[in-house]
Image (cartoon, rainbow, N blue to C red; front, side, top):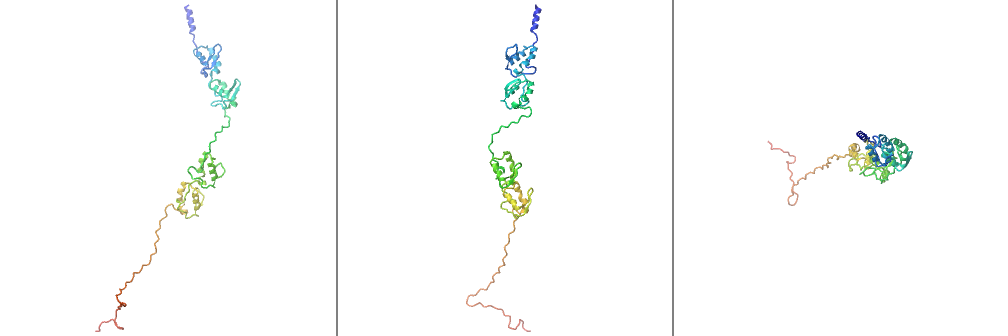
Length: 328
């Protein structure tokens, strides 16, 4: 009888095999989902896996379990139904295809993330659902953009911040990609918010000199110094030849940038005849020297009494005589 007891003990000690109900290296995606396995009461996927961990299933049963619980327990690897790194564009659209009852594209996508879609089916899905769900493993379809709210117009000072404004309103400017326009019209367009901020930032560098946006520039360095040679022709780097008077007018109209204005006097002085330094001091003109006034001739005092004072005349001898000593 002892031998029989030993045999029974051997039967109880039969090795048990742990079983992964999703299959080797697979994990349950929906542990609380209820599954019905033939010969077993209804239970959650997590409870079924616990039985498998405890060796409750024979090897042959364990091999059949993945095909039975795969979709219900979410045993598949995550599936992007639109293809790798793609998402559905129309999650509320209804999609239906062989083997899948009607479902929203958003719910189908969630099923894929939860492992409810087999790898084989996952590979085919993008081409099946693209036209309805709006995803494409190749370039996505172009959809009309949702119009953004219209921002309030932003005024644009075409001359730039802190500038005095257009000094030559009738001048014509040519901006790449735009029709020629007067500075006055361009300025009005900017004030009305008709110029995009990005374009506005570039305008001062394009229209500064043409529209006269700079502060007035006295080309001789001082408003009180005028041109000595207004009709003389002056040549400046980057400029067409012009008279000194035309240059002066351009300066007063704001067509000369401040940095260039500061250097102008030394360039034009020799031609236009202005000098930013004080003119040399000339010696004062001497008044003509008047002729000397002769001193008055002194006169003898007049004695008191009547008549005129006698005038003494020296005598040189008698008439016909001569000055001589005694004979002998």
